[in-house]
Image (cartoon, rainbow, N blue to C red; front, top):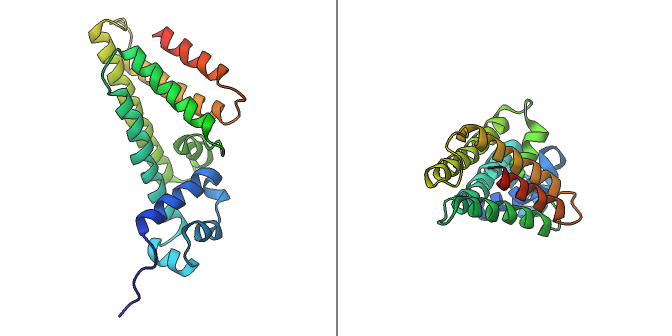
Length: 192
């Protein structure tokens, strides 16, 4: 009869997500993961197979929690431009309040692993596409309500907003104050 598991796999993925988010994939050692999760290396590999398999689970966890929260904010009721601004300000404030200045795990992963890690690249591409689709839907809603000019291309504007978010998340990692980020947010919303 095997020994019962000494840890909660769901909590382990959450702890691993935090480590990968702070240190990146390459910067995270198996010992970092063992220390964060509180299990031995053998148990880590028995439970998850490899560091990369655990990273994939952590990246999916990030997608489900963080990207889902962004989309929920965009889908709230109220004027489209106000919702967009509120969401962008929330992201900037969240990033600035983070003592580790982790930014966005998806953006960080794209910068670190795109082109060299097909699985991570595909996961990030899907996250970006999901977010871009939510922005496109918001733009189309704004066009129906008359807040955004009907002749504007909602697909292009969705891409612009995704790019703006990625840039904001990177800028927030080094910003000394929210001023520059708020200027970008206001200019973006005003441009619609």
